[in-house]
Image 1 (tube, rainbow, N blue to C red):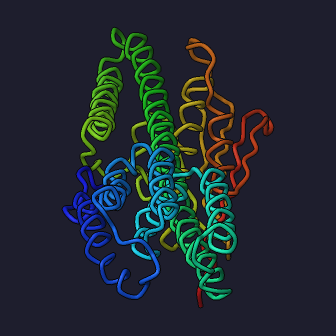
Image 2: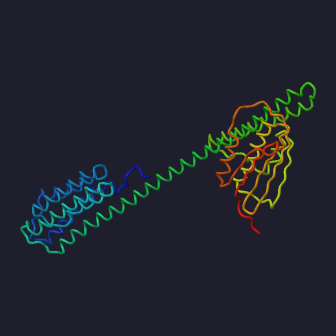
Image 3: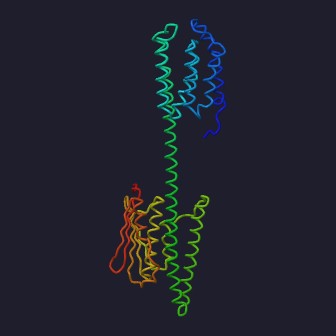
Length: 370
C-alpha cells in the first residue's frame, strides 16, 4: 500500500495551473470576441488548480472552489477552454472519494449555468448546439470514469476484507483443531498413565516384573504426551513444522502402548489416505482404546479397518470382560469422535455390543482406481 503520494500526484496543482495559464493565451487567439485576461483573470486561472492541493482531504470544498472560480472567470467574459481543467479534475476526485451525490448535483448545476449563460446571458452569441453537447459530454466522461474507478476500489476493498476474514476464520479453525488434537493426546495418555499406575500399585508387591511393565508403559506415554505438547506449542509460537502426526500406519505402536489385548484386522485394498482422514481414523481408534482402558481394562479389543471403493470403515469392539477402573470424570470422547467424522462428511456410531462396546466410523475416501 502506498503511504506517500507520488511526485506527479503532489505536483498536479502546479501542472494544472501552468497548463491553464499557458494554454489560455492560445484559446484567446481563437476567441477574439472574449475579454483578454488581466491580473484578476490570471488569479482566477490559478485559484482552481491551487484548490486541487486539498482534493483528497476535502474533495467537496475543492469542487466548490474550482466551480466558483470557473463561474467568476466566465462571467467576467474571459475565453472558454482551459479554465475547465481544474473543475473536471475536482469532479472526478469527488466521485472517486465517495461523494457521488454532491458530484452529480454540482455537475447538474454547472451544466445549467453554462447552458443558460452561453445561450442567454453572454454578451456574445452562443457557440452553438455543438458547444452545449460538448460540455455535457466532458462532464459525463469525468463522472463515468470516476464511477468506474470508485467501483473498482470498492470491489478491491471488499475482496481484501473477505480475504482477511477468511484468513482469520482459517486461523481460528486451525487453533480449534490444535486444541482438539491436544485434548485427544492428553486424554489418551493421561488415562493410560492412570490405568497403568493403578496396575503397578496393585502388582508392585506380589508381581514386581508385571509392575515394571506397567511403569515402562507410563514412561513411554508421558514421553509421547510431552513431545506432542512441545510440537503443538511450537506451532502456536512461531509456526514451526510439527513432528509427523498420528496415522493409521501407527496403530500397532498405539495398541502396544495401550496395555490392552488388541488384535487388528484389515480387509480391502489398502491405499494412501488424505491426511485429514488418516489423522481422524487414528484419533478415533486412540479415543476408543482410551475409553476401553478407562472403563474396562483387561478387555480384548478388535480393530477392523475395511477399505471400500469410496469409504473406510473403522470398527473398534471390546469384549467387556475387564473390571472398570477408577473413574476420571466425564469427558468429550464420543462427541469429539463424531465431530471428527462429521467434519470429513462421514458418520460415527457408538453403543453397547453384547457385553462390551463398539465404535464404528465410516469416513469417505478417494475412490479406488483400477
